[in-house]
Length: 332
Ligand code: UT7
Image 1: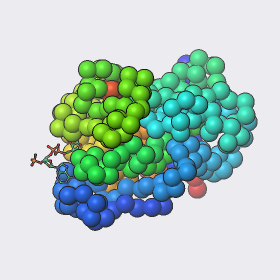
Image 2: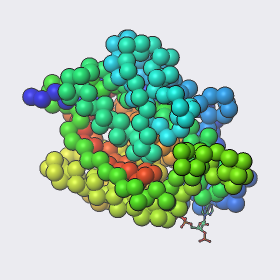
Image 3: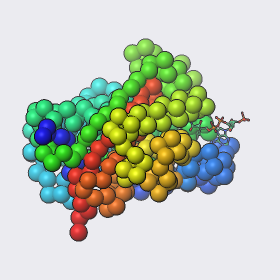
């Protein structure tokens, strides 16, 4: 049997500060009712300390995983940090994270695929395990979205939050772990979801700052349409090509961007809401961190052999789905 890449440990971190819908009502022209009914979000976590970047949360999530599972960080071969908000435009956030957690023998890199970042990183990390190139791969999804959100723009500031989640990938010879993946992208979508300035195409100037071009710009309705169709399409496709019925799926692990997108995906897959991992109500959209934070919250409900279908959609556009068999029983 071919070696598969299994998730053998999970860690997570969210900052303490809760930005509630009620507080947002005092910041922009919005209501708790609008936010809850349109998105499913009640509150999100914010990393308040301006001196701390995404690596702070990535390190916390990794440290929790390492401590809880008695991992020797020196044995980690590769650290991938999926993030849209690196600490700095140049200097790998993954390299800093790896060094800080004691993964002194690992190589490391950042992976930027917006809200699909963790999914892409999981499938990339799995290749190193499947080919025998690595024995322990740490895949982290972390984003400090509050650093790129305009808190005067009600169409985006109600949606996003900060957080980090981490998983360890190790070889499995029993057929458990990552079974299949479908990864997609379409650059035609970038006009609908992007940060215009601060990159090579439009470097920072006084003018770009005055025009607030360093913040996330999203045309919500357009992105919504593509997200609903594409997330449902790939989830249905991965089920059918692996002969999975709705009964076979233990959980859908969906990107937490909007409860209505998640419900549409579950409906197309024919699965009930009790089989959908959800935490959008308490964290909002944490971009690269949504999927590992779902695993972090639901890990005690999962047992060896459970069938998970991951699905995500994000800026780029990027999207995809992964079918994974869970490899561990909950800790006693
Ligand atoms: O994670 C990466 C991928 N991103 C996504 O998947 C996000 C996809 N998009 C969405 O989730 C939704 O489009 C949003 C939650 C962003 C917006 O919800 P919507 O139901 O598509 O609202 P809309 O943009 O069509 O706006 C409806 C109305 C507008 O007012 P008018 O033009 O009808 O008078 C907006 O100006 O709601 C208004 N509006 C708000 N009202 C109160 C927009 N934001 C707010 C707000 N509070 N925060």
